[in-house]
Length: 296
Image (tube, rainbow, N blue to C red; front, side, top):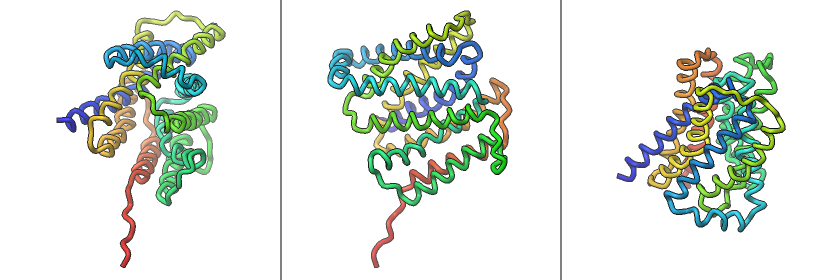
């Protein structure tokens, strides 16, 4: 029964994450990246606070923060503030069908950063995974012109790659955090919201959005930055086979491309599919557990 529950929760999370690239582009049609960050963060914080009420965790929010305020301030500055601001700007500059697969390579970036900052050993298959992953990124970014290295938006590609560094860095900082994960994520939003509001005021952009725009940014806040995270945690907690649930994530970028083509009418360049297959192949290679040869 638990495995069925884990599968339902995991698939729900993956399907919701598959829709967010489309929601990003719909939102960015009316919001600036800073406005989008501000509104989505507020929605996420409200959703996560409601989850904390339901799970009876509100009594540990203040104590968790006060136990290590500098740490949570740092986490909040990285995610959601810097990470999502840079990611949204990348989506603003690039077609979503390019930005999403490039951002998806963050797990490969994490391997390199874990070796650098946590002293973890890089296995031979990790190097192969990195090669597959970053060749895939170049294929997508250059639309298959690998040797010409002509990018449709060099800044957009750079920001998408920078977002992978920030997301990987966030999880490295979280590696030894023993606090409740939902509370920890909520604290990140509570730290970021005042700064995001200040940036929005400084930017001085107009707030004349349509109902469609407000619905889109609410959707992003709920299903990219809030509730979906809780669903994914629930899936991992319910299962006895973490690898089986984790592997569900590989279907997300392909569903995302289908949605982008059918809802937004984005042209999916053949090189995007080739690059995405290379990135996913790298991630799969990274997860393989190779058997050591037995002594004769």
